Length: 148
Image (cartoon, rainbow, N blue to C red):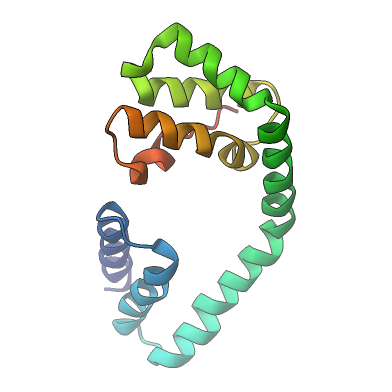
């Protein structure tokens, strides 16, 4: 039953994200949904399991996100990401916005830039490309590609 509730809460979270709501706000709610059918008491399961794992995640990945944001800003300010994005868009065309953003991400990843870092550098250009192509901005995370 616990696995079923995890799948149900994950499906609920995906649906909420697809509708355009903030995942950060609704992830704890979905965790409470999953914990509601577990053999744990609701509040200890939330504070001990969910919040404990969230703290471990933030502690482990905070330096990557912080340095990624700084590096992404450097790439944005120096124009490196813009030049790569403009080259790909020029070759593929603005009508292929999704493929263009995915190719820019692949080029940066092959160049040694982590996708976590590339997200910060590519997002402003992806947002403008998606706006011109009339594609919702909430679909941008789906095109970020990690090639390893």
